[in-house]
Length: 566
Image (cartoon, rainbow, N blue to C red):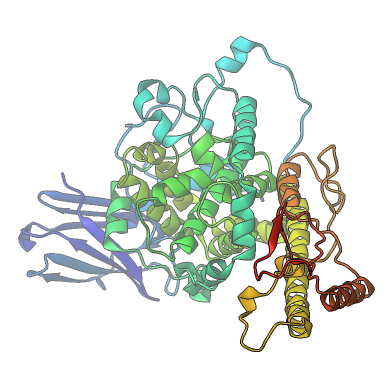
């Protein structure tokens, strides 16, 4: 049998079911309606749905068939007039189970009432979820026990996957041996890799040259147009494309048995994945490129390092560090924008979250070998989120809005780096200002001295006049600047940490120390000495520097040529 394409909508009185069944005969249509069960058969198509509300067959049914489009539409009366059926867009959860096809420990529903009992199977709809994680004293385990517990994927329920995919391993994740690496070791290796990848130069460039960043921050992603609607019980009205509906129909209907700790980790990993997605949408302005699959999985510690988080703050810190280490735009405001975006997505309801996950699924599906991450995480999230109550998403959104992330939390010494760079920028600005003033004063003084020199007739070119040493220093700032001390420390800067000190020292070595120029009194005496020497017939050009060659003209030499002395 073939499962046909279908769509569901509703009004106050009817549930409207549209089924696309081309090349069929209306005489073979068979429709069965009973409470929450709806079955349709038209050879070779068969469809069985488990509805979130009850419908009746009382003679008010209406049906039409468009032969050209092959579209069969039936209006089914609701048992309770005015009742709103929640989750009609969650096509995967509406499909009846197809039998056990997935590997353990993932379970598929085989009971007819799976749609009604889906939430109670996990036990999470009966109680409000506590976002404050419980803390336990660490217990040392043996090596054999640790090795047998190396799991990953959705809810940490998979293992041994990469043992068969060694060739694709390096192109998908950064963990060298995921099946033999403990969670603690994965985290430490991730932190070390981030510390090595962090580039102070790249960060400062994006910090001070932020025109492109400001433009991206003004971009409005598609979810900003989604607002919770009272008609949909607080959820935003989301429209799914035909491709997205088709993908939902292809998913196998599953139910997940998760304990409280695993459920908490699943929620945190969902936030981590959505943060990476929100950043990529904003940074590309919704126009994906060939780097998008890499960017999404690289920014997510869950996808790149198979990370398992224990608190929401850990998720935010991990995402912030990775944004400042790997992508093209490394700015802290991009981190804050992504957090704000995710809070809005969660507040809009599970349909908005599902659309994001389907978008990620499509991006990975078109990239080889990123499809492995769909099998490990995204597909299960697309199925699982359809069974979740929207009030839990609202609770998570409220918690995310209250969360605080500061630059010091990232432990990349950003504040010290910015302070050092700002001081160097101020010094350079002061030096340029002083240099311009010195050049102006030097040029004026040189012109006055050339005019006052005797024997320099009006037709004599300026290049024939002796060159004054002061004209050589106009480009050098006359401000005293502190140099690095002998031990390599820069006295002008506050003490820096180990991560930023090499850059601060490098910046300090570029600063210049210039000896102070002669005072105005010394300049006056020098001018008088020149005038006196010229009156005696000897032209002597004193210099503050050691000149290799001096030209001296004496009274005894009547020839126009001078005597060259070394």
